[in-house]
View 1 (cartoon, rainbow, N blue to C red):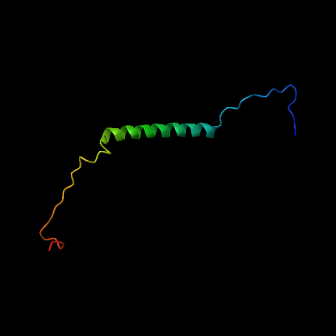
View 2: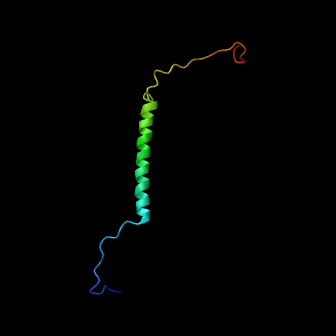
View 3: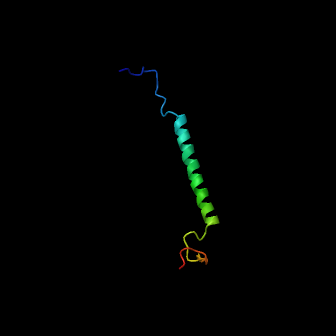
Length: 68
């Protein structure tokens, strides 16, 4: 096991590697994408969970094989 000579001073904290920077950028862009999708959901579907306004309709035909 080697030791540092007395005239070499440790440099301290190393700068972040390229992969750490890419990981942080990916996390930032994913957060921006989630926020943008949430904004779009509120913009285009404000009553997304309120389904009581939907009125389903039924159409019966006379030539249906299921009508006796």
